[in-house]
Amino acid sequence: MYHNPVMLKECIDGLAIDPAGTYVDLTFGGGGHSRAILSRLSTGRLIAFDQDADAVSNAPDDPRFTLINQNFRYLVNFLRLYKAVPVDGILADLGISSYQIDQAERGFSTRFDAELDLRMDRKSGLTARQVINQYTTDELIRIFRHYGELPNAYRIAMRIADARGAGEIVTTTQLKDVLQPLAERGRENKFFARVFQALRIEVNAELDVLKEMLIQTTKVLKPGGRLVVLTYHSLEDRPVKNFMKTGNFEGIENKDFFGNLIAPFRPVNRKPIVAGEEELAANNRARSAKLRVAERSNDE
Image 1 (cartoon, one colour):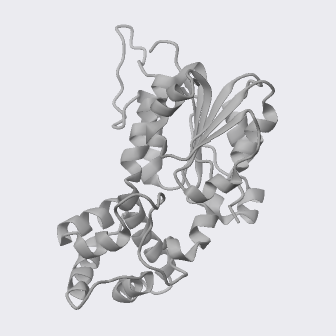
Image 2: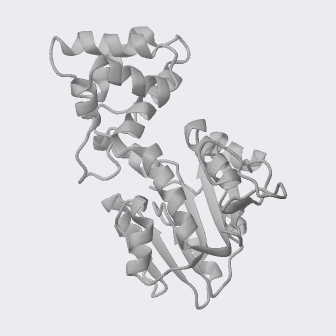
């Protein structure tokens, strides 16, 4: 079962859909957002991306719809291939789906014992098992500090290094057993969620891929077109926020002679949109979600 899309109405409203327009769903998953977009289209078309082969089985049989089984870092290439440039709107829901979490063998969930994998695309090379067993302690410190935002990253890395000296760490349960003494009592779930988040970001190069995609949106969105992005943690939200506001990931403002901001996008909402109380009560995944919407400028 794929998850119910977070803030579905807000996402669709953010796209400001033209029934004859061309739209892109960068994270097809279970197809919830895509079906909602298709319901608003008449003669328009929708191109969707998903690197997970399991998502293909959810593709709707609709002549207006094309699913590309690839990472969205190849956005420009495939939109050109399918003669879909320029587009009227792009949507990206950066959350991991409930379906992927519930597939025990994928290693996404701390609830199941499975081999350390964490690949979104199971054809790609690097796995979490390789990261845990082959990375130096300095590299492990880096990913747990920066991608897990874990203050005890050094101690985590040292425990892993010590443990693998006695043999390879192969499964999610083995890794949890190694790190259990470092988990604060009563907050174990949060601790392990951050450990696995750090590994998942490293394995899938998620932040690099996100930045590559954002830069490419400027090449394919028509002036006035909308970029709608749902993020679930600050590591994703920060580059999205900065890029939408300034056109770069550092948030550095470039202004013209008259003091006007020069940027490829104009944020539609000053603050991120968050889920309402009703949705929060029904869908725990919405708790950390932030939705940002920006409009392609005319001046770049």
